[in-house]
Image 1 (cartoon, rainbow, N blue to C red):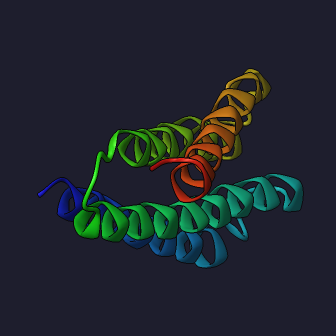
Image 2 (image 1 turned 30 degrees about the horizontal axis):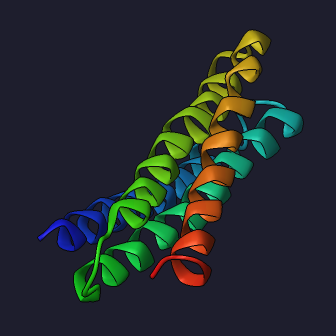
Amino acid sequence: MRGQIWIGVGALSGFIAVAAGAFGAHGLKARITPELLAVFETGARYQMYHALLLVLVGFLVARAEGPTGALNASAAFALAGTVLFSGSLYALALTGQRWMGAITPLGGLGFLLGWLLLAYSALLAR
């Protein structure tokens, strides 16, 4: 059951990433600086990458025959990373508040831990 949850969360995150990308390309282009638009687009791009990670992990959890703790942790870190990384970049681009960029590395750490836990699950877990 847990695998289907991650697939659903990943699909919703992918939907939001596509909507954010379209909003950036069509709704923000004339309203914010090119630099801030690039920041917004980076948030959308990384959100999509990690939406795909969530879907992948969901499929792996659903078909796993053994413990799935590291896989579930991988998805949880990817989701937290998305909220912190992409969310802070969206907020920075929309508000111009540079201090929001201080949150972004925490999201990047979440992404790194998510990928590391996926590697652990694939290579080291029994």
